[in-house]
Image (cartoon, rainbow, N blue to C red):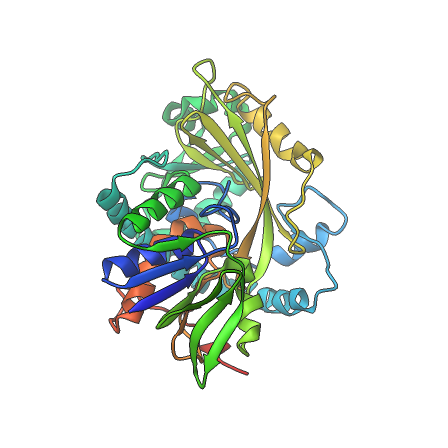
Length: 419
């Protein structure tokens, strides 16, 4: 079967790989210059089933409200005149109950665990390098109150089979000497030994190369403008290269998926949530942390990547703009420098901002649509790196008419099938 995948990010390229493995002819289209050049260009790098908590929770509305006059909140709300933001926000706030947060967290955890196992399979099959770092991730807390609250909250993940170890201050430093300068700032930590990290962009780029070696056609710098349709089927996608025909089409365009879905008569509950990252160079004179992790009280993620340190922070619900300036990174850099001043060269920051394709639940949409040959694999939000390989295998199984290995609760796009 000829499968045309719209999007060459993590979701699109992993989908291409799984479809190729199943014997299909695959074409991938994207307007960017290179695979994973948008949302995953410089993301956090954490592969973290042990951090699969739903963003929509009872505490979030207060945080968003404070963000209207305070710029130091981990989740920031920037009101827009775009009615799509208001509709999405209403759905997101509707998920901010204790029951919904627990349900969504358990569903995310299940997908993340499955996806991590699929990532291991892909990594073994391909054998390429992407600055993979195994052995766990550290989630530390600056106050005893937040540490104790986290221990209770983490029982949700433990019930799903995630192994979590509680560490005191000295145990944290013993586990990762790179945090020694933060000793006085750490009250305790949760350590998840099965979590890991890696460079998502390097992974995607290398996997794209493997796809082309298997016969896939990957067309970058190709603008997707619309569709040619016959009754309930799509016959071709119209692009800046002309029409490209296929038997089946996969929409995996992240934050831009709703733009094309509206042309086909249905809406998708996906809205961009902006994140900021800084990548710092490091050499033998620096003391990189051994593991990646999160400063939980500031929702500041850090990740060693070979001879680099990646820092990410902030979830900003605003617009489709990726514009940024050095002042946007001042707080996160200062906090990181206080924690690990010897970790990297703070005088040579590489700034970046990207848009996460968030659904109100935090779960992606995977499956068919009202168009008989259009499928979705989109809306992976802040955990696209963790969820990508599993989501792609689920998609491939559905296309093959096979039952996926995990339930699709919360991920079925059937609710979007409306005119």
